[in-house]
Length: 167
Image 1 (cartoon, rainbow, N blue to C red):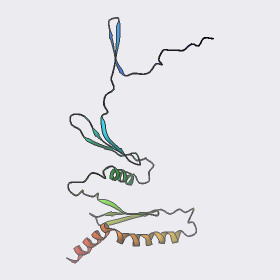
Image 2: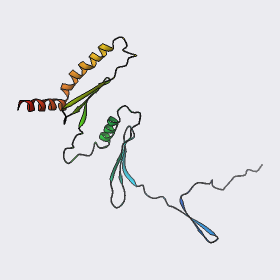
Image 3: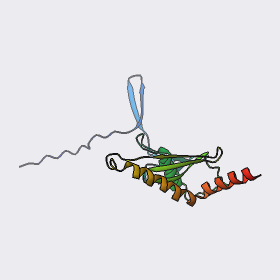
Image 4: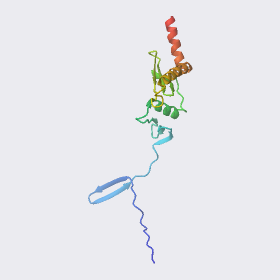
């Protein structure tokens, strides 16, 4: 009984350059080069930070959020904070015009310091609270009243408004 073995290697794809000159064809495979990304860091949610290689290296960052996410801004902020935890700013960073100061139990409050406005949104599940939806609205209003005084940003805005009115 003779056993036949195939000594030919299996075909594999190789990147390279094919040159056709007259009746001759030659192929020059590309060699594997070093990675163009170093110090790669990833975070939950799909964000990524890396340093490019080359003559003028750069720090790069990508953030990712699903289109169906209820709060894409919060997704981006969480990823950005996770990826830049070890980077310290040289001077204070300006905050956006609107800042979320409460995000709890279906309730969100957004503060616009420049306009002196507070916007709040609440979500109530009518399937869970169909009989006592009024109590759920009252609970969310009470939550606003309890949570806002704990926000330094909110207290600062209120203080500035009060001081501006007394002058």
